[in-house]
Image 1: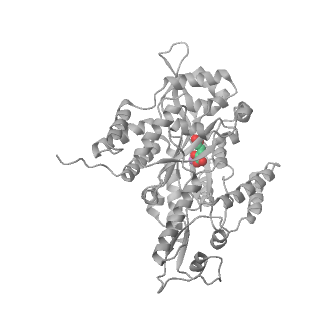
Image 2 (image 1 turned 60 degrees about the vertical axis):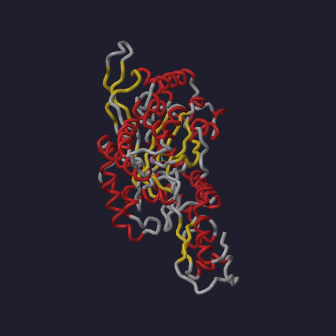
Image 3 (image 1 turned 45 degrees about the vertical axis):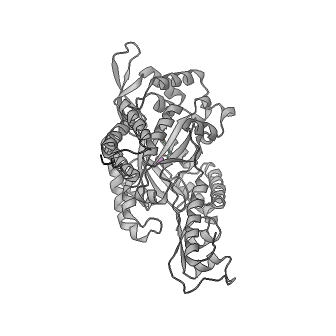
Length: 465
Ligand code: OOG
Ligand code: NI
């Protein structure tokens, strides 16, 4: 018998992301409008962007977000994403923003895989120990212990893949995608009673969203735009209820990191079990899912990130002094004038990561003349080597927190709900739930940059690392 052909993991990821997008479009009509606006803008800007020259990648590029309740859920989600060549990168401590959760992002980690399809999922895990109310904590844990967000057929497929070196055949992959999608779908019947839902919602709206449902419904699916300021204006013109301020750095000539904005959550129909009679249902609504768009810029080095964080703190201090959204944006722009804004200065001051490539062949081995700081700078200045900024593929804790907040109902003042003394990061806790270490984001960018320098060095016969 001929050996079974296995599907390529990037192809599988592309199929999965496309299926997810189709499902979400049916579930959340606002999403289709977002996609249309973003694609119009991207098509008109693609030729003048230095960060995204590949319209095909840009058109399919999405990130989703899910909120999980238990270590077992996170561990199984990790098994699903592994089959799609998506790995946990980065640690995000959301307790700094008063949220009882921490997160990582699953995404491809090889450059080739990212280029084929950069699908990523921001994945948060509840930290029950951070909840102040013992009653809400116990209720959330009981509900989560009772639910199972993975179908038996899905778990069988995961086991099958394990027994086949992490590979699936075409036929198995079809089953896998269909079953995995169910985990992320919206279900019309909740997993709790309406009273349980109200108790958790009063404690923290996020808690109700995490613990009261039968699935880890995807709560947004975000396209990437080349100009978020323009996209935001278009959406407001079309009557969408956008968040007042765009998260992340103010607009710049050279985009850095990540800018994000969201569109108010929609109210969805859902039925709860009633307390009195466990068999009967009561119709109700739940508000959690929303539209989000983002613009990605260059990845910052630790030096660049320190400067970004310092300027962000400075502009936050200014805007907390009671400025309206427009004045706060203007103030932030002024503060961020201190962040260099040409690609040469960003690279020269070691603020961004770049991928290097030889663009002009040399007759003989280049020699350092001393006219520039390093041989690499000299080769770049002479036009022999080009430096292309590496796109930021990850997330930002404070932007994430801003997005979370903008979509919470204002019923609860979430910061007061946390037991303050227990906050703080717990990366080891998240890693033990995953059963695997998280990849450090700086190591990843540094590795991509270094590999490109090694390749250039080999080509030119010099050492640039
Ligand atoms: C996740 C919010 C964070 C982002 O893009 O930073 C996020 C959530 O609401 O569950 O998706
Ligand atoms: Ni998001």
